[in-house]
Image (cartoon, rainbow, N blue to C red):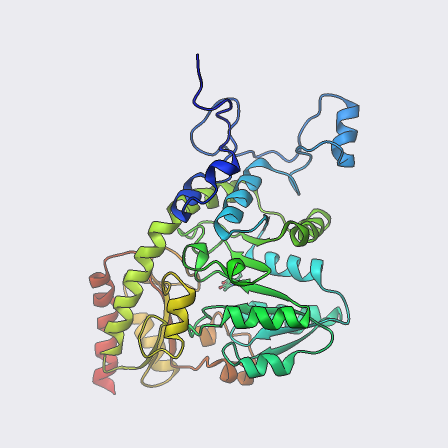
Length: 409
Ligand SMILES: Cc1ncc(COP(=O)(O)O)c(C=O)c1O
């Protein structure tokens, strides 16, 4: 009897070389057991057994590869790591308990007291707190700069700068950073370029191919895509990820096998979901611009967006998140949010369900008034994470609140 492949337990990496992201999303990283299951298996086990004391010693000593303990070796987690690494074009990924755990693990593993970080001002509020409050206590100082102003980035570099950290597009104002220029700057400064790729996912943007050293994800967002689990991942070279993995093994901010399985299922549909998110978001952004109660719309897919050309060059789509300022202040923004009936009022994003939030009092609520003002988080700003429902139904849900605002204006 001839077999299609000698082993049908996994697809060798070389077979997937050069395949498109649509194929990698479905096929990369899967490890089959002897049961020959078609879907990815879950391994909910804390530890693994050995055939002998000598084998246990060899595994612990690193002389023999294999599973030891699920804080740092679990096959379901490894399958997720293999798939996202292939999609991002990185040598290795390290999965973590949350997106914040991925950022923390990367920083603790690769920075030390006395070193300096330059970070874009518009990053997720909690990332900002992590740098300003916690990493500062351990002697890592951070300077914040405008995401889009290369002069500010250049001016902030010091002799001890070891990391440039950014999100592009930014949350919630959809500003876009020039990855190629920042990569040149990081190289010249002998610093690592770390990009939070949460908003684009590897389907729309692969920062490693544009000179970044590490990509971070909150897997909680689009990688899951259905708002079920919290998780994160860092992707980069084998050398850098070995350091991050070493921290994870010692400190334990580990992804659970169940969550890894959910994320594996999420990745399978990521390419088709991202295209649907992008189509809906562009149409909604164009429609919002025509509404009397709307002062300004932020979405890189709009041709007048200041970084529209850059985004079109650097990304394979403009993403599913947009924000807009209503005429008025907090009262008007809240009344618009409260008038929606289908759209979910929640701070999470990247879900197939459209979500609406008021950044100034939720995601960015912990920022000082000065930091909010500098980051453009005004009281009349509303963020939408556009889902994959019918765009006409989304317009109808928003129209109610917009009409009430326009009447009151
Ligand atoms: C851009 C971005 N990065 C990181 C995070 C943190 O991820 P998590 O909530 O999974 O810790 C978030 C969460 O909202 C985010 O929006």
